[in-house]
Image (cartoon, rainbow, N blue to C red; front, side, top):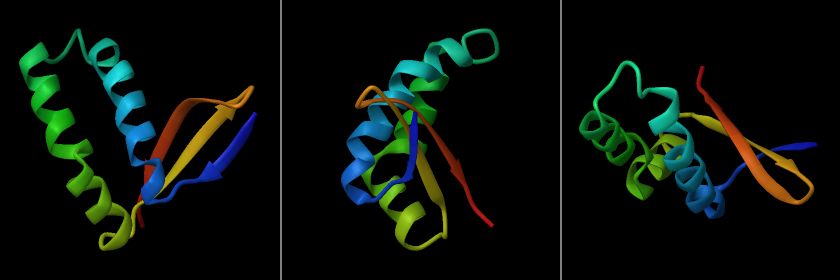
Length: 76
C-alpha cells in the first residue's frame, strides 16, 4: 500500500471516496439528506481547495494495487 500527500488534482478522487463511504459510515446517525448536505458543504471543489490552499489542511491518499482506497485529512 502507498500513502501519499494529495494535491488539488486529487480533489475528484477525494470526492468520490467520500461519496462512497459517508452514506455507510453515518447511516445510523444522520439522515441521507444531512449526509448529502455535509458532503456538498465539506467536499465541494471549492471547499477542498480552500482547505488545502488556505486553511492548512493536509489530505493523504491510500492506494493499493494502483487504486485509491481511502483518504485521511487533518489540520494543525
